Image (cartoon, rainbow, N blue to C red; front, side):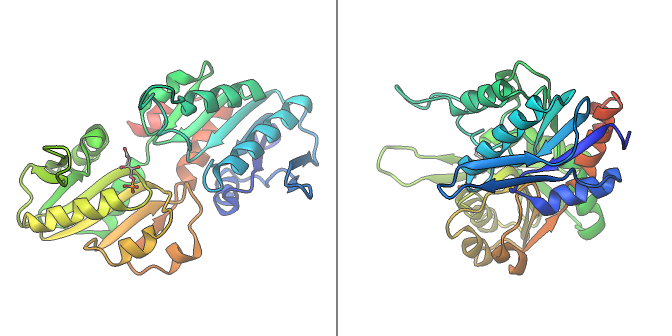
Length: 314
Ligand code: R5P
């Protein structure tokens, strides 16, 4: 296998790519992804990839457009270099939250991005915790959507010994994801239901489920500004929760999110490394990062051997 598969890194998350290559047991394919003076992206693959099964690892995280463009141009370079198959491994698929028209005359950018990746020449996509499973249908090529849940469950079992755990979805949209994790650790489920009863009135946070005296574990796909998470944590504490932990797949963490989380009632936020942790994340006292590299590495190895990927989650 080592001879026929090639793993290439974009600039979005070099550490994750190296960890994935180490898991598979192959060196990264030599390639340069750099900028011209006017910031155009230039790619040069410095090894023969003719007839190879190739995997480009690139999250479309901040700066999202630059990283997306790198992914597209690397795909083009591989296609023109006669790679046999190109898999776009996108640990964090940005633009996923733009998966519907929120109002008249607005785009569905997640679909546009799917079209761009396909038209650039990708044969398959491998991603983690898509914001909405239906986004797989935006692609007319196979998409493997890996779940971070087993990695989180292992961490919860190893690190937390909670007498009375309760898994909580911070909004109604995340219930399916939270319920799946609750089932895996055999814990009850609660839901934070945000509602604005009347226009002009502030939002009310209702908790559906019993959280009093419980150790709550908030579960979500994305933490961006941190607003959803911190507000949910406050509501749980107000409702009598003993303590609040959070497990989130993608740490987008824009603006002052890290500071907001540091001064929140969240005891610990655990993120995966689908997005490269910033220096602020690395030094934060209540944020810890666990690696998704073995899961992605195993999925790549299985894809290369034409083995089942879904059985990773049985
Ligand atoms: C929304 O549907 C997502 O699942 C996250 O809850 C959301 O993106 C988090 O955003 P923020 O951290 O800005 O509240």
